Amino acid sequence: MSDRNVRVICRIRPMNEKELKSGGRCCVSVAPPQTVSVVAANERASADDRTFIFDRAFSENSTQQELFEVAAKPVVDSVLEGFNGTVFAYGQTSSGKTHTMEGVADDTELRGIIPRMVQHVFDVVGAADKHIQYTLKVSIFEIYMEKVRDLLTAATSGIPDIRISEEGKGKGIVLKGLSEHAVATGEEVWALMVRGRENRSVAVTNMNAHSSRSHMLFCLTVHKRDIREFKSSVGKLYLVDLAGSERVQKSGAEGTTLDEAKKINLSLLTLGNVINALTDASSRHVPYRDSKLTRVLQDSLGGNAKTTLIITASPSTYNEAETLSTLRFGQRARAIKNDARVNQEYTVEELKALLAKAEKTIARQAREIEELERLVKRLGGTKRLSQVRDAVAMATADSDTSEDGATKATRHAAVAAGGGKGTGMRWYQRLWLCPPFAPLSTKRDELRVVPVTSDASSYTAE
Image (cartoon, rainbow, N blue to C red; front, side, top):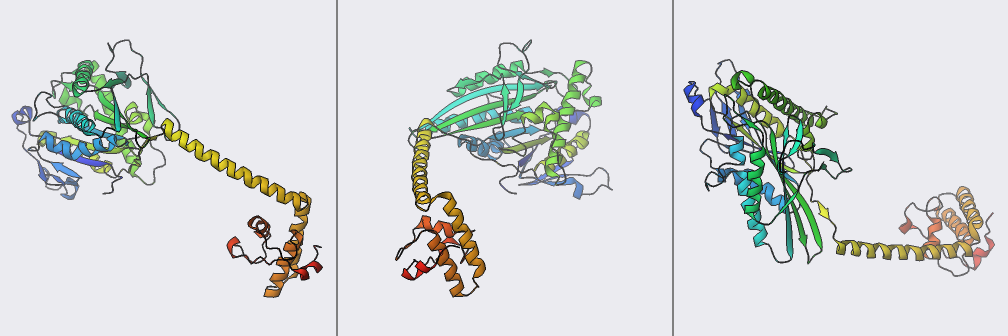
């Protein structure tokens, strides 16, 4: 796949206790490094429809570190160089998304992508040369019941919704009112993560004792400045833990939890519609605005970002339908093409250098204009130049395509332009022989300008 494509990583988790008790059996096999197959319960089902190829596939024996190295580390490194990047996890409820993104923070083996990302970022910042300066800011928010809420404010109740807007073409999506917190150590970042997680909306369902009822997004903004080369860039990293799709008859959701499930499924349906539109050549509209989630992720899907999608799935026959749906979702997403580019910012020093260059260009052009104005005046003004044009047109019409005829036309133009005996024409005099005046060639460099001799005095512009 092209480097521009969204990268899709598949992770199959181990069977959990509920699946084992329900009598489910394993129906998913992983053939590293890229293939995932679902064993058909129905013999009539086509094996081709149940075999999927991804950028990488991880079995239930994969480690958190292995997943981070493949799925997240390349994106994080790109953000540190000024690109935008997104890593998000998609799958049904209880498929292992939160474990993949967060894991167990105080366990070095079970730490998820976010804490490993934090450690890696500060390792890179700490090892940077002295002339490289970094400024890091963190925001954490959730999309709950189609409302964007800041998870780092003192309380989540009574807070107005964060407004989503687009600051002009090419500038990306902006969340107005979202707080940003400057951080200097990994401990500060993790303290913010704990606060955000405490404020996140969760509930108990039959499928998950800590079911996320919102999409949580962690945003790290990295400002990089090279004080020696006077260069500056800014990259944004989104780490997204999506709420899981769920079937109400399995989750047992009711009341508020049921309303939450409807909103979650609706936003994930819109996400699927966006991916379908992006991968369908005949589609003329991408429905980003149909959901707050897809609006926020607009740059990540088909825009200015390097994106990795991690799909998590259950291996049990109990969740076979949901697993197939997840795998097909990932297969479609893999065809999305992004257009990632470095977000360059101009420093004061760079702007001064650009201004000085522009001033030199303006001064040079002003001198050329003055020289041309003097030439026009010497040639008798604009009325005389009109006569030159008419003379050239008449001489060209009277001449044939032979050498003598073309030379005669050139002499007419030279005399009309004010050339004198033994005078060679300068570049700005030759300009008047360029199209539509040039009788010999359409290329200025190939014009044969004939100096006016004493014989030319008999030529006059008619």
